[in-house]
Length: 406
Ligand code: ADP
Image 1 (cartoon, rainbow, N blue to C red):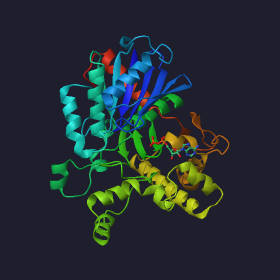
Image 2 (image 1 turned 90 degrees about the vertical axis):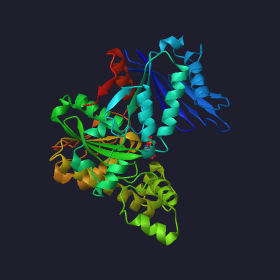
Image 3 (image 1 turned 180 degrees about the horizontal axis):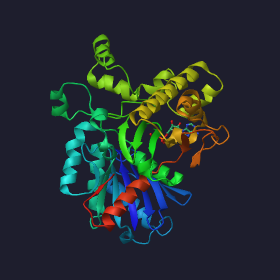
Image 4 (image 1 turned 45 degrees about the vertical axis):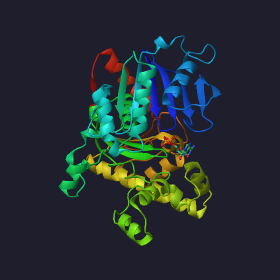
């Protein structure tokens, strides 16, 4: 079965076409600047990249361009559109949805109804699903939600101690994000260690520009660092992560800022960007300077590591133990410095340690634990698209309406 996985932003479409026979990636690409001057498609066949510059007004036009590229005689990877069997869609906020779902009118309504929880993400996701159904009307479309995996969290983990009135009225609770990545990491860890997932306590550290940590006990998410929105938890490229909530009204009052302005500051002008005095948000820039002891970046990096370490400690407590800590995503997969500092500075008491030689790796699956460590530390590249394609295949093959995630 060939599955097209798509991830729509407001002005972009990321896609991958996978052959699920052997989980082979046939093609991937990115269409940018939809509805803006300079739209262009970067389409990859094998390692070769082709750039097509064409004005694209909307997502329907964008998807048609992508399909044309996929079936093109020279740069395409299938000979006919009918070779595409199903589409898997990434949807950011599913609210209380706990499964991956075949797209129906009700599912579209549910995505729409959850827009108030993810106003920047759900509308383009919805637009993408509708456009794809228009362009590929005869094949199944499956929605896979970033939040769904975390619906197994217990009440202790998802409840905020604010008045019930508000929790109920606005569905305020911890939802968590990156669920598809954490779920992939859970399974990949169990495969890597050749141990059943229900026997493992895993702490999955998805450290990219956006970053979150998940406690996975017996295959189920039992806590995660992002909350009602992706702002909570770790320090990120431009997001503050945890702060004292009293800072919000204080800034509003002292600086005369609106709620939108404060939200913008915390989401777009904080994090590593703020800690480096508005200089860097790309972790490579910070690390290169931290490594040569440039004071600002060294301190920023230490603050960043410390927050990660605190969450790992918290989740070891939440699960009453930990067997394996896994690093993934852009920084987690590629930064020996981060892994070494987080584990070797802070996790000795848990029985975790990183072997410095094994740790010198990027973008590969590897056990980087020190020989005498009792808690394993792994690097595993995440693959959210593959997880979406797997769910899509399972729903379609078994003619299901929904796929329970744990
Ligand atoms: P997102 O999907 O949230 O945009 P990614 O998972 O792609 O983020 O991660 C992007 C981050 O990974 C950037 O901050 C980038 O600097 C960092 N990164 C990529 N390669 C390296 C590297 N070799 N060393 C350190 N950080 C890296």
